[in-house]
Length: 197
Image (cartoon, rainbow, N blue to C red; front, side, top):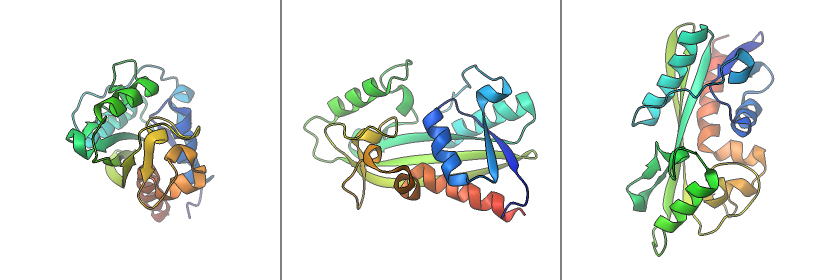
């Protein structure tokens, strides 16, 4: 167990994501959202891989504040669409990053497509005392043809993980965190942090 409270800046403004990650990390690790340290601007994501984008975001925060931090980048990768939208998942339908429009575009591109195999993939980049570490989580599933559920965010209402009948948006947070891509990556991060002490 971590012997004292560890504070980490989480490079996100997404309250849903912050809540999910804090739930996994527990009370011994305190997450500080960007707004709590006075960062309100969009953080650059100029690369074409999840790993590069996660590192770019974490480095941006660390260089600006000197605080221990981590960032994640997540993509939904659909097999029949040559693994799109991938790194462009959040802005699939445009720079406005509208989740409903992203879902609409994805379902339209999958119209009459039988292969609905997809995976969510998350890469976390941690910078701790100037050292960089990477953690990855992947969950496989399928895309359904209409939205179900009101929890979660992004593509959660149309993604059903393998072995389940519910979408991520229909699942209790505790269940989702135990099987999700982000949950897996955060669990690896959590274990790493706890092993330091």
